[in-house]
Length: 106
Image 1 (tube, rainbow, N blue to C red):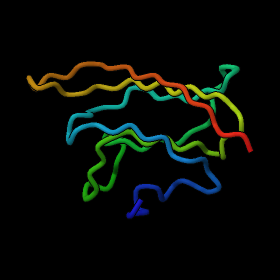
Image 2 (tube, rainbow, N blue to C red; image 1 turned 45 degrees about the vertical axis):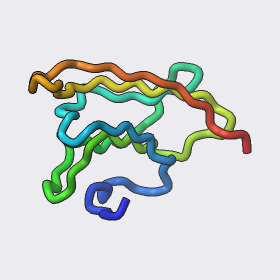
Image 3 (tube, one colour; image 1 turned 180 degrees about the horizontal axis):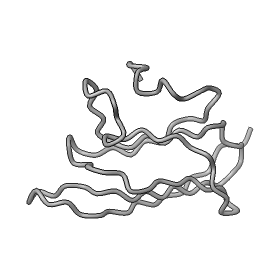
Image 4 (cartoon, one colour; image 1 turned 45 degrees about the horizontal axis):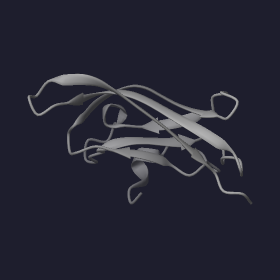
């Protein structure tokens, strides 16, 4: 990120960020975001999103999930996100996003 102001409260070492992008001003409010390992155990994360952004000079068009520790090699993870997004009719609707990924072997 080119501006460290939005991550000033995050202490390294951390895992690689997981980013979900939206069209400009589409994402309105984050409801929840979780990252779980293959056993269903939650991984501690920090979250950056438009509604949690305190620096109004920076426009964030998505959700950035930063694991508080580097992720394990050769592990399966699941990301679940619930948020309110705006529609073309200028209404807000709840959306759920879910996807899984595997980290590389060492």
